[in-house]
Length: 403
Ligand SMILES: Cc1cc2nc3c(=O)[nH]c(=O)nc-3n(C[C@H](O)[C@H](O)[C@H](O)COP(=O)(O)OP(=O)(O)OC[C@H]3O[C@@H](n4cnc5c(N)ncnc54)[C@H](O)[C@@H]3O)c2cc1C
Image (cartoon, rainbow, N blue to C red; front, side):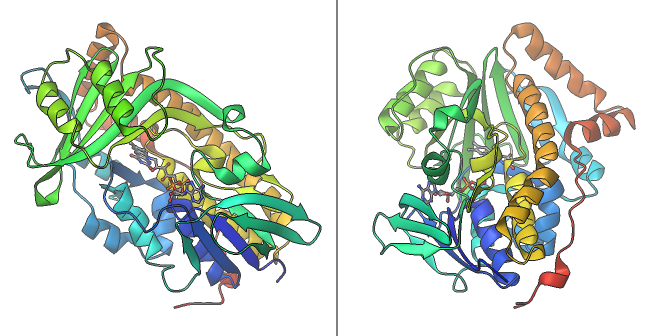
């Protein structure tokens, strides 16, 4: 096996999955993660498809289910909180053979992290500040840790990947904005709960959703059309709160109550909905995976699944090639890129349906959910919307560390 020493930047969904599989195939990964410690909680995500299969192969599903929630319905309401349309959670679970779950992003990432904790060196609270590729390795300088030489470096560090910026070029060259913004936060003891219903209230060009969590918390999620206002400065939480307030100014339903909580939210997440379109996922000894390479956008519902699947494939191809990184990176990209590009296309379409821009398209969206109730038609419509068709290869014969 060649090129065993692999540095992974980012201990999110793809980084932890990659570290898990690389170690299992006999590589020696090290991870550098900007955050000082793993994070729990966060926004609610749906998880199914190709990523579900990877999680099954990692025996993570029982833990995911324990941390997860069973959503009975995605309910659309009017300003008086009366239901105007809905999609049954049971329909989705039936169509996907019950291989579907909803859980907070941080809880999913944490469960994967637990598989590598204590088994793989992790540099928390640090990041790469310089990468320099040599003929026999990559010299890496970190902000805090001592510099090191690695055989390969993988950027699994998300939408604004530092590895991509350093080895490939500036973010703007890779980002394709979809024209929406989104934000989320959680709050305690919000009085309206509607347990089991993922409840959304929309007006043309803006939508607020909420879901009741355990321990009396509620997760809020906002999405709105970009009105061309200047974007708040990154990580300036006060400016982000202000931007949300402006975007939802005068909104009905529970907005005034929600807005009063927004200003004390401690876990605000604020991001533009954008896709990452990298013409190549590797350059020499450096490669990208997950959102860093092919983010389908926050609105797609598929980011986590394809981040996990990409990490599984990348590790598997490195194992299959005996560490021949050029062959492995090329094979990984040629196998996975067509699937990912298809996901990105449907994500861009889905974004327009999720936050309709006009009163007519909002009405049409709500009406179209009625068709989902028609037996058979509903199931085939749902399958067309969320089914995915990627056959994950098996690399079992390369596994050498089983614990
Ligand atoms: C509001 C919202 C809703 C979403 N809904 C869904 C959904 O329903 N279903 C779904 O599948 N996906 C959803 N997603 C997307 C999903 O969370 C991501 O697509 C997925 O986590 C991508 O995995 P990743 O490993 O590429 O990146 P991440 O999981 O984001 O991990 C990147 C890691 O890199 C670290 N990092 C960042 N910069 C550096 C640096 N300089 N050095 C070192 N480490 C660094 C970060 O701290 C993080 O730990 C949603 C996202 C958001 C924000």
